[in-house]
Image 1 (spheres, helix red, strand yellow):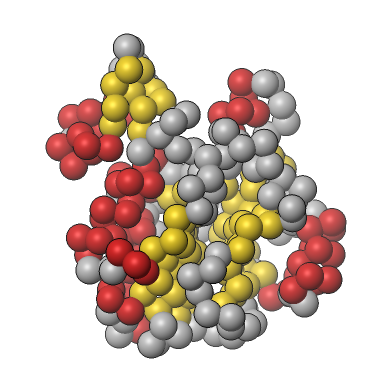
Image 2 (tube, helix red, strand yellow):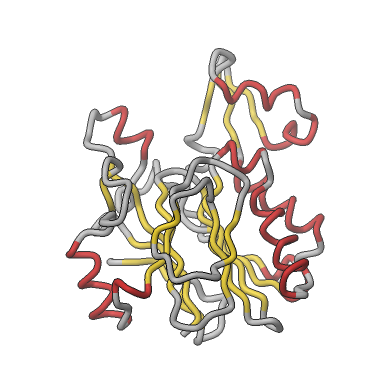
Length: 242
């Protein structure tokens, strides 16, 4: 399988996460982050040219950029992209962090967000939704959301000596952390879903693929690569209005 495509969106919305057959090396952090193989695949499979791709630096921030220029690579502290333009492909890189896809059915706006534990703590997904409301007149009840492959609670753990431990002091996170011996297992997706439900997103408007990047052999995983001392490669998610 080359990619996972989400079914919650209408046919004019392309939303997918590529599998391990495609990816990008972490050190390739500037313009040519996408391999020729992946560029050719996107062109052949979806008729997407490289000039249609837009991506950003990604620094685990809470900022989403509304695309107003023709710059393909945004070298600022953004972890999300938003647009109402057709034929404009939004791209994020991730390996265990959560890719979040948002689409407003009425205002015809899309957003694609990279939400790691830091971004989730900062509620980048919610802030992106609020930006859609402010800048495009969106309403939470009209927004469809998909959650892509990421590290799940079954495999995503930390101990008290890691930076994640700060979450243990925040009551918002209590129900999304399970302790097993000296480790704490983190449910990022559960937190994200609850955040959206509280904001007014309808429960049947969220599609969660349920795939754990650490469990599944077909997706890139930072934690798995680190444990096995492999070269670090990120996965790719993409969203576009056709």
